[in-house]
Length: 461
Image (cartoon, rainbow, N blue to C red; front, side):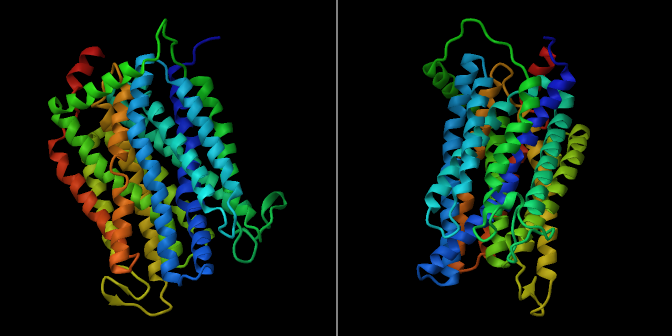
């Protein structure tokens, strides 16, 4: 069988983003996350808590799940990345983590609408989320082999754009044909497809199996077109993997640009994940939106992410990733500032009428900016990491990137929870994200625009 062309390899690599994006778009942010929050809040109110306390408890249990899974990904990713590099193979790992994705997503179907099995629902979500994140580490490590240093930014941005487009289409399908509103019909006025029971919330619960099926179907081009050379007589060695990982961590002392970048991205990506992880639940718990409204908000946000990611890839190619990262961080800080200064009663201190739709309109606008700027930031960040990655051990390098992105993953949910508890305001709970973005911005001056291994890469090209 003839080897796939480079163009096919690139498109195959794009299809991983397309296939996996629904876990983040449909499950984490816009459908299952808000659905879980509503189920948990109703369950806690049934147990005797008032609405405000129930909302806080629901947000706390959701944030605890994201914190634990983030720590598992952060500290396990670099070790497995190093192990894969010592063995020379990545595809078996990607297959294994893909299985975790499918099992975890499928298990969300069993989430009971009465909140009687909240822990089981979180365990299934965590299993799939860990699988998706670990697989991403290995597929990210394939990026340097797909183009020249000048092309990587464009490829990375196009991959994110293609992935967000997949997330958009999958979210639209779920909303039109499956997720029920309070009247039992979808936003298109249809009964949930396949005869699913709206009263038992089966249309919404089907989001999990749908994401699993979507992944299975659209990973086919990836596995057909993305190939790797099988190494000869190479053994898996945990000792070698840990030794290599330890050497990489110690080596950061001699690579100030990489160390500064990992520290910066650790903070600003944590803040971005905070926006993603709590945006939908914020709308449901604070603005009292329905899950379908959150889904429409998601469509607008993801559409912006797809378009902006493509635009950001072009800006990356022209100006490099560093200026793009700086501008997007500043923009996201302004978005957070707007959310903090917005409520049903006022906007930046100006009183609003009780019937005012301005908060809803502004939050939709914030969704556009979060999705658009977040998409650009992720693509540019991946491009910047490529400029720092060790060409002889890219999986390990992206494992460190994953570690930096997850090592403080507890910060955003913990700070949001703490400030919310102190102020008794979910709106003000977003304020710490501004601080995290700012800290990330402060570290960027020490990051070299072309990375600290550009000369080495030029010699190898």
